[in-house]
Length: 438
Image (cartoon, rainbow, N blue to C red):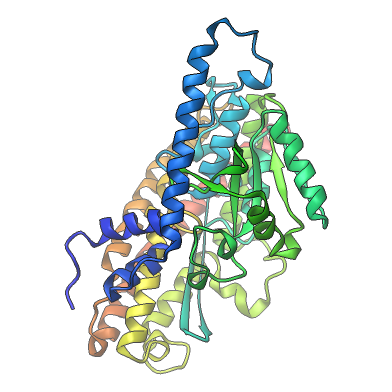
């Protein structure tokens, strides 16, 4: 069956209305599946949130003769999501903007690109897994397996308060205290428990960080990166936070506008680059990862994927894993979806965003040498985009081996370029680290 000419646009519009992933929204459009009734609630919530913001702005205009604002009131306005490439880096960019934290070297907010790079930026992991509903494809092109958000918070140089507790009541107390101080609060929730998400389309174990921006009547306004604020009741939020017990109601906020020194950002950028290149090149130990699974990470992981794409005989080869037309379409659809994602992968496999990070980092004290590596990662971004364009979920089953061979060729070329880029960047980072240690 042919695809609608504007399928991507329809898919993104449905994602905004329903909260479905790109892959799920696309699949449901092609199958003619109606949207969940929860989508209507989500739309209504966004309308309420918009109304609240408009009222707040109107109130500001009336307050010209009001008493002087408190320090909390003078914090910058919480910005709307804009040009989001990596979800978590963009989310913390908005939180840090609202907290008044800036890059002292430029006087501007800490950018999405800089925060993404400090978190580790890029990486690679690919594998398939047999589940109850068929084979699941996983592709991660952001830094992993180190904790992305924890890296970001540790290296951004801002003052960060983190809290965990087994008590739901205590968790609310922590959050309310931060909100009362005029701060936004990032909380971790089970995606399936959010009232505007169809829980049947999301893995129960999958979590997401949201920003609690403030209150609207008896509800809370939260930013989930959709472009508009959603409303959620305190009870609903508590349920979503408690569902994943191991997270222990994790939350974090920025209690101070204290901004990092340029020298601190420079040192942390070099540290991040060293970790990222070591992970890509396989020169550092994969802590906590079974030995047999390590071959799925970094540049070795890219070559492992290419081998499995070419393998037409063994049970680990893609031709045997996707042994029906439906399985093939689902597998390729999942693979393509990761390049429209903003959490674990994204456009250009996040290499373009990493090039921006290197460009910004090169302006920090003593890091001018990083500028020489920007073009290499821009080139990689283009190569990854070309790979994504090759993926065709409409491939005929009888021609799957040919299609997989084309993808394998592209991945092998990318792996070669990735290795050259990471090796060169690692050498520069090592020199910069040695120079700083003198």
